Length: 371
Image (cartoon, rainbow, N blue to C red; front, side, top):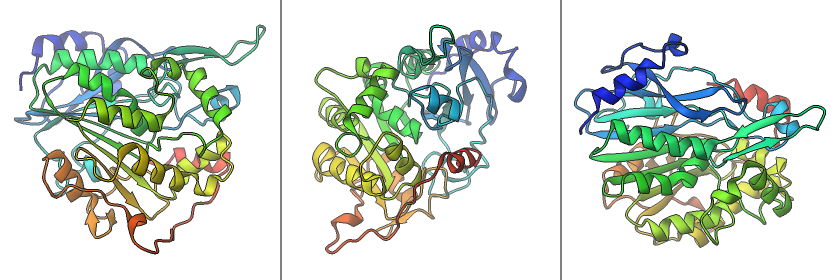
């Protein structure tokens, strides 16, 4: 894989002000910070991405971080979105857990992948390109929902650094999981000839009637996400169908728990009439009607649990229908014939055992502080 040292040096020149928590030089085993000119957080502060290089890597992993979302003054000031400003947080891609554990034999990203990590600070699940004013003429309150626009800039920067990797994986969790669905088109345009894999972890593709339609479309308009969808695509479920039909060579996976506690909270926040079952009903509908049981390049891994974000967990410990998530992801990444749908709900007599509870805002704030 060709890696552009000259362009990397150009990126590094502009990192001196913000790079205190990161290596000042990129190198094998070091995470370095690279500025992303023109990209901004919700409050207008400039944002960035980081790069972790591995020895002899020929492939590239792009990871979109998660952290909630907000769509009006109440949700933005209450902290529904983890960060709306620039926060520099290092990521240990060698000694962490799950996809971050280089010693885990079930981790398909343990080696041979350089890693680009994208911080999340726009509150729009990487779908927006709009400056929203949630205040009043006397007291304006602007939030720059520029996640989609930022990601387009990111793809350009990454392409400059990695013009011809053997494979590119786009992965995200929670808001990042929604983000990879939304930005799959950009990945395809950036690397049209490269082997591509997309992994959405806990990024529930909400759509009416599982959440209130009026509230849902208002959120989309507030973010500007409605303007960034393909023609004739109105919601995240339809987007999955569009992606599968228009980019059939991309191997896509969606990972979710039926009772995802965090996504249950957000379903309630946008007015789901039956929030405690909204996630389960939504993801089964998506698997049946927008991905399909026999889709050769799009699969789901469903878990009877209330857990949220599974790729950061030890991959051999996440088990459904006798399969570990680590081996399942490895089959996807390596394009193995064993890769198939994992759906407990297809078992005769299936009844969901793990039941979510509704978190309140204080509980959500405490959740956000968890690693």
